[in-house]
Image (tube, rainbow, N blue to C red; front, side, top):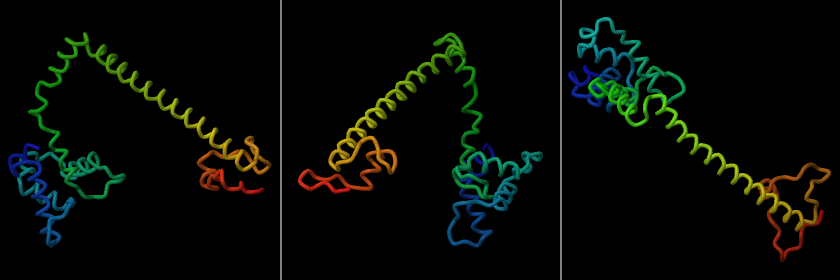
Amino acid sequence: KRLADEKFGGVDEGFERLAQCEQSLQDLRSPPRVISFQAFKKTLTKAGFVKVAPEADLTLLFLFLERVGAYKKNVDGYLTMNEWSLLKGFSSRALTGSPARLRCILDEKYGGVDQAFLHMHSAWLERALAGAMCQEVLAGVQEALSNACTKRECLLRGSSTTGSARGPRRSRSALARLMPLTRASEKPPSN
């Protein structure tokens, strides 16, 4: 990240440089949206990354950025802007003192890290249980309405609500797909 800031003027500008290198390597008319390892290696070597960190493995760095930042299922050998932008999260200045400050805040407010976790977990659990109970109630209401509609449909058609020789009673949505509701003015279909 420091190299991107110092040599390119920032992470976003660094990706633009990578795209320019890829464009020249591939002889493209416009900058590409993905960067190959070849362009990655050439750009970082030219920027002096190998001199700053001679023990660093560019292949490993490329694969790390691609794998960790990948929203896709598999690694395809190209970096996207989102994957390269992971470097923004590696700002050491943003983290300086933060863990210590966080611990002090948690100690002051909750009496310690363990108590803070229990408080957060309890708050989450309350909401999760309330949401699950609401879902169960809605599922029960849906089932009751479905059964009521199915009984009405069966009465309109003159058949049994308990099933038939052909099999068990279907849900309302299945019946609605198979046969539309008969209007009261129409004669129910005969079986």
